Length: 295
Image (cartoon, rainbow, N blue to C red; front, side):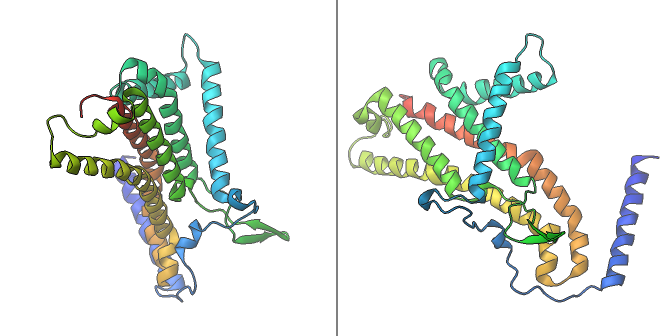
């Protein structure tokens, strides 16, 4: 059977099921009262320890940290002279980060120093994004199974909480600022913010703009990661049935479900890795620029 014929049969089955659902439950239904999709991202304290209280965001961070450490240790202990498929993939990612991200933005000595930090940061963000698409029993809603109240499965990502990307951005900001001051000294680093050949009042104006530009990097790093992950989760949530619940259109859930599946595959296959790569690339650029003598 040809691929075109398989697609046509699958589409026909989909249309038939859609018509059957509309015939069975109707098009319109009662709208959900009090349902708000944003509650999926609300953090409820599980263990109150003051500023170190534990909630589901902390759980996701611990899982990402454990996966990052386990991956690093596994790779370090399993490297062989004749690589298998896993090692080949690891070496491909390693060389990509080393040559195209870190090595392209700083000299060899500095790249060797900062590569472990940037690679760990990229892997940690990647795992934080990836596990956000795995349904885990972290919801405050429960369902009853033989008298046991089991938490409902839900999607959540720690990077969809602005505080997490912001803390990572602050770590990057402190890292490249301290590296620039170490290489040039405090006065030299501040002077390096002004392009060569700019003097007089214009130099002061440019200096203020450059300081603001450095502060804005905190927003560019954190908000880019946060907004992309949050938007992806919200779209998946709407397409997977939330839109049908809000509008009270029962059949709409079946119609939007394929789009939800497609968006889910897109987010898992591309966005999770892409956002980690962008964060790592910008980190390397900022570190390299902090010690560069050219503006």
